Image (cartoon, rainbow over all chains, first blue to last red):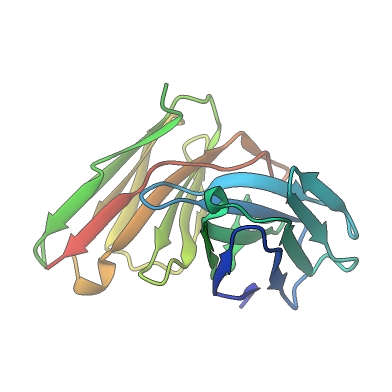
Length: 111
Length: 117
């Protein structure tokens, strides 16, 4: 069974703090995607990382793919209340578009 | 314009009933998916169709039957509903599957919250 372990599951911080979410697996993925989901809505893609060691930045969000393409991290600098939501990592294999999702991290940023 | 739409948004029904959820995408994508998100927010793929052809069929009870009349639609029919079927069901689509590899991001619908009483 291919699993993606995502941590922490819950994170409650104050506005302005930094945070990191981790996504780890024993499997190698062809790519890894990060999604954000708000209550009552479907997940929305934030970024896709493909190359081992790749780093991508999206404003205050920094995404990194591990060298071995088994793990990834999402770092948010100076979190804002608008960052509140469920963050999901998802690993892709060469199996017809199948994504394996992590358990998700529920982030709450208090003003 | 809505990219991926699902109906209904909410579905409350009794155990043993049969129900359907409909999904439509207007993005011109070739590949569509059904996911189930449980009460702990864990998202798991159920089925995937590429141009009306079933390409992923996870270990899902055969009470669940997807149907794709054309590449823009993927419906999910569930027979003999059970309490454990209560969840949020998401439809998604992506541009296509090229040589067995998915390409492009997956666009998700707003979800259908199914409650079985």
